[in-house]
Length: 398
Image (cartoon, rainbow, N blue to C red; front, side, top):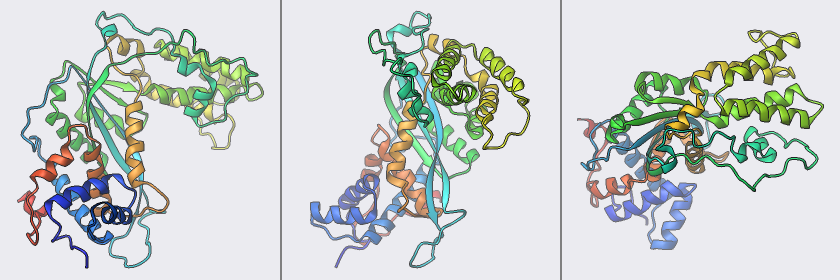
């Protein structure tokens, strides 16, 4: 006979929840805890326990005060960023078999990263530390990988240019925490604000908010982080500029690549208006106005999309100014966080109860990925012993 969720000791709960945060399924957690600890706890019991703990963590996050009562350090540089992910859900209480919720079961997750950072010495002079386009953005195979397109055939003319390599060294991270949820954008914005208050981000002298072109990202910034410098992730600008340049020169990869390098260099230098003007002129030369509707299969669509994207985000693309302030210009850490969260929650074989099971695992995974050890500290403070009634979401809120 295995243990029920009411019988699992606090020590075993600590091990199980950390395991749940890392392994790909509750069944794997069951096998691992039996093999490593010699304990028999069924996958269903582990699932119920994870749902309890995840809901408790979600309730705890409603408070602005840090649950551990520690005094947060005011960051020298505070960076907040957010992005969407995907998770597949099923209707709760459906019995055996998978009954998907919504269209194909896929739902958007919202994820945020909060990085306490320190500036590099190069940023203290107020001079642009990297006016030259970094090497990584001039290597065809890397840029094509960013744009998720085949690498252009340049006949070997595009060497990796690793000698005299140019790199922009932004501020370095000291500590990161994360939040993740299936909440709507406004509720998620409130979650982000509470985390920023707990981390004293609003007190930092240098603050920035990074995101891609998703509308909800900038709605959250406008409402909850208006004093943070808004920065469009340069990587996403690369995707649109590359696709547009290659669409302008479909018969010559070399010509398309040369145009991409010129366009992306202008963006890096903060001259995005010149790129928009040239793309707009090209658009009109091909019988299409930027405001026209374009079919998805129209070969001119990448040009049209780039104009729209750059116009919508040009106020967030003053990259020389951001570099002079010692700010990051890409959301690579955010993209990495999304991958780390998706590793646990996303897969064709994964189906989460909508919404409670999905919400619980997102909170556990985000806590596990936070550098402040919040998951372990919460479990260490969590009341419980065999047969003792667990604290529920309702009693926490009371």
